[in-house]
Amino acid sequence: MDFELTPDQKEFRKLVAQYVDGRVAPQAAALDAAGSFPMEIFRELGDLGYLGMKYPEDVGGGGLSEPNIHYTIFCEELARASLGVAASVGVHTSTATYCLHKLGSAAVKRDYLEPALRGEKIASFALTETEAGSDVSALTTRASRRDGGYVLDGRKMFITNATVADLTVVAAKVRESAAGRADLADGQAAGARTAPAGRGARESGISLFLVDMHAPGVSVGRKLEKLCIRCSETAELVLDSVWVPEDHLLGSEGGGFDAVQESLDIDRVMTAAMCIGLARAALDAATTYTKQRVQFGRPICSFQAVRFRLVDMLARLETARLYTYYAAWLADQGRRVTLEAALAKNVAGEAANEIAAMAVSTLGGYGLMEEYPVARLLRDSYFPLVGGGTVDIMKVVVAREMGL
Ligand SMILES: Cc1cc2nc3c(=O)[nH]c(=O)nc-3n(C[C@H](O)[C@H](O)[C@H](O)COP(=O)(O)OP(=O)(O)OC[C@H]3O[C@@H](n4cnc5c(N)ncnc54)[C@H](O)[C@@H]3O)c2cc1C
Image 1 (cartoon, rainbow, N blue to C red):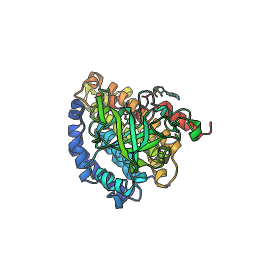
Image 2: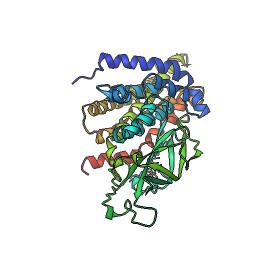
Image 3: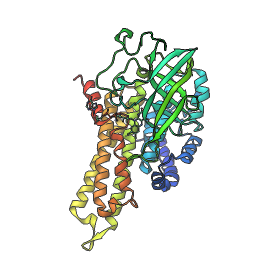
Image 4: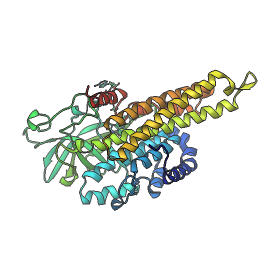
C-alpha cells in the first residue's frame, strides 16, 4: 500500500498549480461575474497539452501510464481556482472526446478528436432533455436512417459548452425510417432493455452521434442563467432535421451509450476531484481569514468553536480526498469503478458543499460578500450534487452495485 504520489506526479501538480495560480485564479471572480466561457484559458490549456493528456500519443494525447491519477490532480488544481472553468474543460476532455476516441472512425479522429485535444475545437455532450433527466431512457431525440446517414430531430437541455461548441456528441434513439416503420428503439421488439432509475444504469437502446455544431439545422436555444459555475455556459440545443453521415454514428445502433459507460464512471471520479479542489480553496480561505480577523482582542482562530469548525472541514476534506484518489488509482489498474466512482462523487460532493457552507459561516458577514471567494465557492458547490447525475441517482447506482 503506497499513499504517496510519485515524483513525476508531484512535479506535474506543481506545474499545473503554477499555471492555475498565475492564469486562472486571478481571473476567476471576473469570469464568474461575466458568466462567459473562458476561451483564452481553454486555448492555453490546449497549447499546454492538458486537454489531451488522458489520451494516447497516436491521437496527439499525453500517452500517460496512469492517466486517471494525473487527470485527478489536474481537475483538483483547476477547480481550486474555478469550478466553472474546470466543469467546461471537464466536459470537453472527458466523455465528449472519449466517445470520439473509443468509437470514432479514423476520419472522425483526424477531423474532430485531434483538433479538440489541441484546443482548436470545443466539444460538448448532449444527453439530457426536459423530460429525460435522471431517467435517460425517456429521451425522445430521434435519428432516422436516410441517404447514407441519419437525420436527427430533438431538443436537448442543460448542455454545457453548447454556446461555444464546434462539435457535440448527441444521444438519440434510432428510428428505422421516417416513413412509419417500427420505431426500433422504443419497443421491446428491438430487444431494448430499459434500466429503471436512470443515469448510471446501462441504457441499451441509446445511440451516440457526432454532430458538427455548424451543420444546417443545429441551433442553440436560450443560454441559461444559473446559481453556480456561471462561466461554464449552459444552454438548450435544438436539432431540426440535422443530417449526419453514417460514420458519425459512434459505435453500434443502440449500443453507443453502453460502450462508453466506463468513461461515464470515470467522469464521476473527476467531478469528485473537482470537489476536492473547491473544498481546499474554501478551507484555505477560511483558515487565512481566521488568523487575520480580530474580535474581542484576539484572532478568531483562537476561539475553540472556530478552530473546531476548521478541524471538521479538514476531516471532511481528507476523507473525501483519500477516497477520490483511491477510485482514480483503481481506474488506472484497469478495474471497473462503477460503485467507487458514484460513491466518490457523493462523498466529495457533499463534503465540498458542507465545507463551503462552513467557510461562509466562518467569515461572518464578509462570507456573504462577493469580494471574498467563499460565496462563489458555496454557489459552485451545488453543481456536483446535480451535474453528471444527482446525489440520489448516485445512491441508486451504488445500491445496485451492492446487489440490492
Ligand atoms: C449546470 C449543469 C450542467 C449540465 N451539463 C450537462 C451536459 O453537458 N450534458 C447533459 O446531457 N446534461 C447536463 N446536465 C444535466 C444533468 O445531468 C441533469 O440535470 C441531472 O442528471 C438531473 O436531471 P434533472 O435535472 O432532469 O432532474 P430530475 O431527474 O428531474 O430529478 C429531480 C429530483 O428527483 C430525484 N430523482 C429522480 N429520479 C429519482 C430516482 N429514481 N430515485 C431517487 N430520486 C430520484 C433527483 O435526485 C432530484 O432530486 C447539466 C446540469 C446542470 C445543472
